[in-house]
Figure: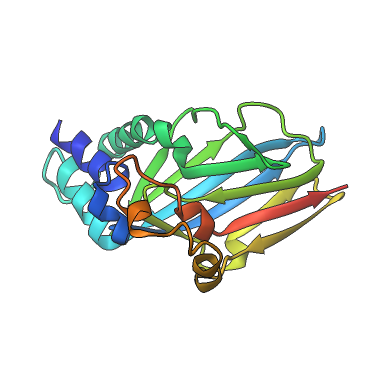
Length: 212
């Protein structure tokens, strides 16, 4: 129970106070894969977590106290996160011409622990076919703002496969511009809403694709 609560608390169960700033940090890579049939096939996610969070996971999942995560312990971390993040669509957001597309639950989340940092690898498939037509967007962010997921460079958000009829660009919103454009809604009541908000999507880096 303790190890499950540790992951849930640090990854998803953010209290109201967590809206002020992130508590967990991860560098990410997102590979958007198109299949031969002219549809989005899947999204490959790679997350590398900060050392503080990684060490807390080590302490909670190191059953045999050998100061490392053995294969069975890594698998247990993956199972815990697989269950915990389902409610949040695995922090993955997809839109098809403005319409939000749900994602299917991954088969598994692969986990590794190297150089004091926890790594997670997993593939996400859209819950329904997405043809390469019009405007598509893809991003990764935590709607609770508890986890900060960052793409260090634009090369960490890439297109793979047959995108010959599409043009893609990485969009990194300017925080000052976002705040200025949404000043009327970003009030104290907004930030203290007990039902939560989804303001992080306004600041999240995303890939925008325009297909003919």
